[in-house]
Length: 493
Image (cartoon, rainbow, N blue to C red; front, side):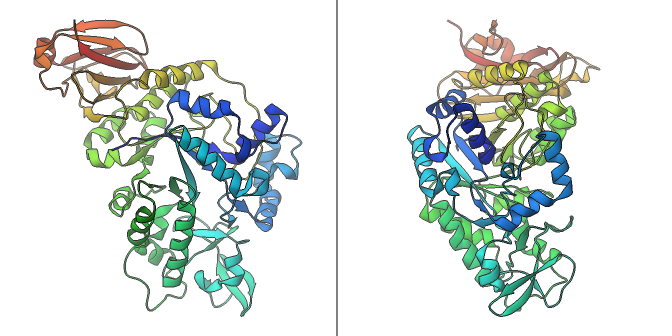
């Protein structure tokens, strides 16, 4: 199974930055070659363009007027103007690309260039709701959750059949989102409309990141909307078990990625998602719960890990450079890059950006590049590129105590990768702020039949290890604080 290396880009801010740098209007139709070359150089297999779809005027005005957002804009971009605010990319007025970003034709051209270089395009699909500027809200109000009277969390919408009180979208644990309308998946017509829309989106990309995908589960819907009218003939099956196969029949090899929380990740995998967010591992790494991170990857079924999206930053989370030191940042990054599954990096993460930009902005502050972070990430990515990491068979190895009363083995993440032939690769991370030691038993057949050259592709050191000793005792590791190693093993000559 492929283990994608995904790069998330804030499309609006990225195009604006490129335009400012080049002194010309950059759209999806004329992105500089240097961007594609950089993605190739770093080994990315998939590019997620976040925020390509149109946001409506009402949602944008709400993003301009909202006091808390205005305060954030003031702090980030002193002297900002309304043209710097695009509105939430998750309040979608239409699944089309604005002409200012190159239009649908520009996105098609971008995808062709990306595919021509062996990379694939991932776009957003927001299944739970549409922006209240979307034409369906006025033209097809029957597709939405409604109230017979005005209640909190609804808004008035004029339709051909009179005023309707349509629910703002929400999840069960937080107040409603004020710029979006809640689709009603208890209705067969809504499911049919959204499946058709999903098929349309899928025809324009190679994969989708499905926003808050668990909100469509029947039991979540029932819990969230039990206070509003139900539908007597609601479909019994899950939306995803019908929609995902339909898309994959029409688009072989298409990728489904789910944003999902609340312990529902495995359930979404069982419904057909190729990859689901691994927020629990993210929390362990960001909050420095090193032994928990190790236990999580060791005790989770390998199939679950392989179908997870591993990350330490995305547009919803604080910048990792704000949370972790450069050395910790790189150690956490190599951890998620070493695991089987989808590995995700976020625009700005590699340069040590610290400012979390509201998604409503289409311009972001310029931050100085942190050379220590950038050099660390590039060293890791360049070291991984020629190896079997992300390409072969992965084994997550269990560290053993180096000696009695030495608990530091709990700080290690050790992942072995192998393709064909005797050579294999071993990724070693010490997450702790102090030296740590352990032994690991390598998962290699005929290990004792060779002595082994052990070449550190990050540090440059080379060692020779006895195959007999490796087979009997395991590999001894003594790692510095926040150490990152990518060892390539080959039979000694």
